[in-house]
Image (tube, rainbow over all chains, first blue to last red; front, side, top):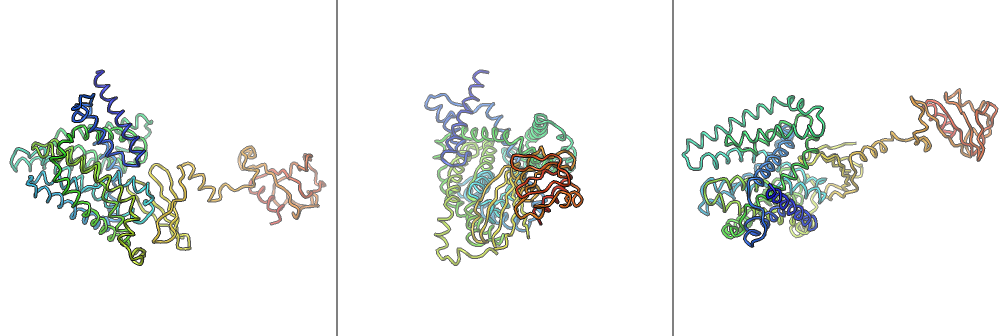
Length: 402
Length: 161
């Protein structure tokens, strides 16, 4: 017991230090939590004979709660009404984002001789931008009050919805169909969509139940009751071979309309932050940096190809919102950071059966998220310099908004 | 005035208010309750952050801007509120006030407004329960009691507007 508590203490010290460094350097905390995990884990600290945090059951369980809460919050923020309200613009920007970026990742995997499922995982990792990093940067840079915030946030909403479907499918492919034929893949997909369908109905018709459940509860009871719904449902999902993350996303959607959304966000976000940090740390702990060498080729290809691809799709997304060229370029720069959801996909891949899924993809994802989160934040911070470079002609730069 | 409202998924809501000169005031209300206020000079320029307020402070400043808090200075103090709608109010008599030189009886304050003058502060001295024959002088402070509406009327009669 003492050993386990010490391990956990070690973990939180590393996270606190990583967070302090991030604050000092003005970087996002996510990549630094991951780096902290790599350094404090068995593959670095352990190799040098230092005390290290093993990739054990406790950290894994807490990280799992982290995934569940990250996706639960995503669901909370996600409103179908909102999507329907500006559906033409969101759909146009979102579809461009999807058809430009996902196939590039899949193509890189196929060119490297990976299987279709492995390539699909790579596609997802390079496709999904980081809601956490982008939203934070928008607020920090003051862009939140500018017109470019709308295509950026709108595209993120589309990505979030897509990723829920994507995770549901890919989880079935990775966990259910790895060593079996097509029949078993179909079966596990059927189970997944059956369960999610039931959950969706429960969410759709259970709003008043959720509202009653939380109504009048004191602070402590409120937090506990929310967790008592989200965590068991996610557990059932995982036991059935369905993505626990998607289940949590749906439960979040159910709570979103219960009238308690803001209260949940206020009261549970500290809990999400704690478990989310453990999740990023856990990703780091499981990463052997020497495998980064093996992932170097896909990493170089992905950074070189997906940075301009996101710039292009973000630019077109901005144009779909009738923004000027300058602002659309900015929307492109803003979509570059990748983060938490790329790591969620990597965590899913790590549960697969092939060496590529177990080792290369997680190492790739860590390297990729580190590079893209930093590159993306730098690009956003330096946007005025880039805008001046691109639009030397001032006439074009100051073209009025449409 | 046109107000544009839009959702900021994951952040909160944004309202843009046209200021008339092509500029817009942009108010971002975060889900946490924090308000950030920006000004955008024109459609092309970037929003410039003016200030941010916590939820509670934003509401207080909001009521101030709305004018709901306006009262002559002295009634800011809660002691002057006697319960119900009754106020105790201090009204200063300026040099050019129309009531200067008149007695309380011919100033007609009570009949016109329904509020009574219960004391007159004159320098160091206080005339308590002045009768109808008491003369109002420039520089006096009238202590008035009555419904808040009536007190406001007394203040405006004394100011002469």
